[in-house]
Image (cartoon, rainbow, N blue to C red; front, side, top):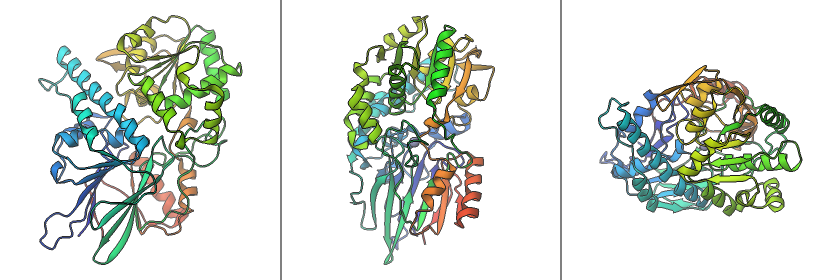
Length: 477
Ligand SMILES: [Zn+2]
């Protein structure tokens, strides 16, 4: 009998990986096997160690991957899957493929750097420490990507087909509607990937990609994210608070450090800074956008205008490409990145990774966290167990590259920048369903968030909702 197995993002927000096996052959041999997403586990060691484990089925037995979007917790394990023998097609939207083209090699590069560091300082119990995959291996896996425009049906096997619909989460993001036909029966399986904010500019100001997940969905079974299953985003405009934080910090001679995902979140934030500078609400202090893919990220963002909201279109018409803006510097090379450390006057540094799990943000924070004049502003979700989570939660010190760094800088967070629908927004979307799923499995949430969303959906919508367990198999009857 066909089944779904949750190989990741069950009990946690990272490592999204869900297997569908049609398993329909009377001989008992495995059927067609497809992975929906292939993300990397991030955060606590207990989870990261799962990146090194083999899948319950051999990688070469998987025929295809359907990828919802380019966040590493959804795509970051693809190079490892290919390294372990997968050679099938990886279906994704054109914008997702462009983003993976820079994000996966960058991830490989970071893995290599970390392994090199641990070997040099003998900080690992593994001797020698190895990268999960290298930059070169990440580049090699790109040949397997196949672009699929949204709303085009693609046949995966005689029993399985799929279609992407927009998820409005980040550039290129989509939900996967899977149709499974076995024993003369047709079932629709909806994998939401990550779900974006509602259609409301006042609630989600500065949103870059088109708003709102598709209304009027229907599914027989749904696998749904639950990141904000127990929370509500603030509904006020974040700009006045952001402007005040920047003004105060600059006045006391400090700098503002913003950990942010290099693609889209960073561009969205840059447009907001530009607006605030042009309107005179913040001083024209230098802005550094520090990422090895800083320039490429802007170029990809500029290329996919089909994804923009009206507001973004208007801002682009008014201000043009961020690469041309006076006072905004894009640091691509390590030397350019290090030079930012020499900047002793107030500035704004936007750098990745957004949850401080790796990347250049580490050296910026190591240098600037001990100084109480500085301010760190979190504009993204911080998963439990990440450095970002600890800093945001008020830790007094943090270990970065093996050194203990005291935290004396001001620490703040603006939740309005989230690209995930919160609980009221999720319910608003679910109420538009024309056919409610017989069962909904919640994934991609910390246990408390998933449990709370299950309760809310059961109570308010009367749906049958389960929290998915890691490695759990669900038969598709
Ligand atoms: Zn995401």
